[in-house]
Image (cartoon, rainbow, N blue to C red; front, side, top):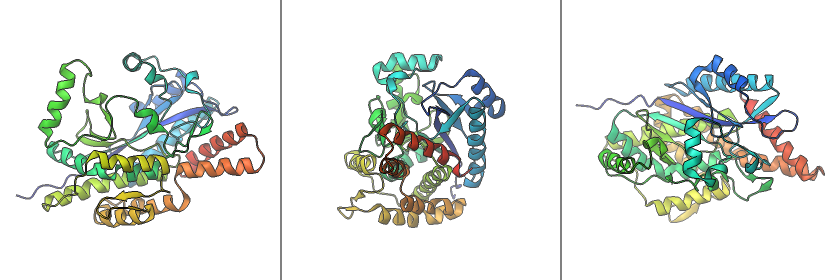
Length: 377
């Protein structure tokens, strides 16, 4: 009996930072702002760990076109209410010059518990990410696809990187966010599990010890969702431009379908040790789209231009079936224009060359991020 093809529905979550319109410094989300957003968006908007953050989540979407409409509405609505409160919204994984020591966490039971459990590590979590859920009903399929899709996480990170600056300094990394996030427990690449039962036993062992309440406290770069019949890609920096978010979501969705399709044909993507994938993860974190990644079959570092073309070719059949080929091919545009970290550095460099002082050059970067947030809306 032929297996029914899953719908591979998608859902997108993004975390944003709020900045003061005048100073461009981080600002606390007032209760009235959250109330106004919730009146329009219900549960699709919520406060985040820090008071300067806000999180949105789309509906379950069957296609990228539906996700574009929903995400655009979410971004426009949050921005409208922020501006009514003298604030602007940016979608970057780190604020270019903010100091984490000046920020405070949101007073909610969940976040109070997190602050207590994580100690001083939690205070530095001035970072924002983007998560993509893909609906896969069968538990064994979920584990199998997580095992295989892990290989492609560095590719996604390189395309998404948006956090080159930390506390007013260029870190030399395209994604400094991961440097902060990796200090938390239960982060990084997901372990490889032979079955859903093995995964469930491993999670239950930690739950039974009272160390975590459930699998939602496991923060791997890719994981089976604790709440939904989905896999959840968490590797990406949040993207200033909505079209980049949609390209990344389309790639995750298409890769999931591609790997499911290969499994149906008794084929699969080769599994590599996390030690090797982590080397590519570091290269993506450090160099973004500029340094290339290791092709373990070729035994060489291959430029991202070549890897992206190969990736598009690999998932073209699936992207076509899902109606998101144009979004997948948007990866070429990211390479052409540079990822978000590249673009921020260009703005900073141009400002310095125009003889603006460093602090003003960094504010130009924030202005650029505000403009990018609205560019595709």
